[in-house]
Amino acid sequence: MKVNSFDRAAFLGELATLSGRQRSAYAIACAERLLPLYDWFEATESWGDGAVLRRSVEIAWGWIKCQVDAGQIASAIGACEEVTPDTEEFSSGLASRALDAASATVQALETCLSPLPETALEAGEIAWECAFGVEQSRVRPPNGVYIANAQILEKLARGSFVQLEEELQRQSLQALHKLELTGEDVQAFRERYGKLADH
View 1 (cartoon, rainbow, N blue to C red):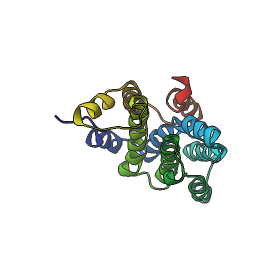
View 2 (cartoon, helix red, strand yellow; view 1 turned 135 degrees about the vertical axis):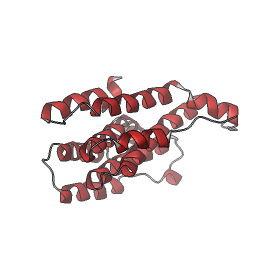
View 3 (tube, rainbow, N blue to C red; view 1 turned 90 degrees about the horizontal axis):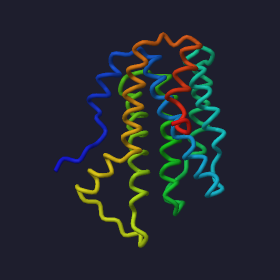
């Protein structure tokens, strides 16, 4: 049985047809959808600083609007790395989701500096894997013993969080083809695709 996974080739093909700013917008939206998971981790573990990630996402959107320079992006990357959790230091599975959120934010910022299709794709794949991780946490048995086989993995890859993330990524790419990313375009795109809590 072939287990479903993030379709790198398909998404890479779509990203290759977009401009650098459009690719960056895709990556930033992927990262922003994960921020509530970092906040949940911070509240549970009393560690981290979600405000750093949110400021970094604001800086990234500012880059799309041509209001931010490369130095600000580089500083934001360093700040995010400082609040990225080491999952080995936490027993909660939320640490992995917080790691995803921080990593996706860094990747989105990197896409602003180097807007290649492959750079943007990494943010999308992190977001997909985060959704897959959420599905995993929903089916883990109470005794903590979890054996992943092909059938279970296939079911997880078809789970509602994964399907929602895939659909948002596909829709966002389609929308970007039609946008020039003016100020109003950026805000409308962000409201539709950048905020997980709204979906």
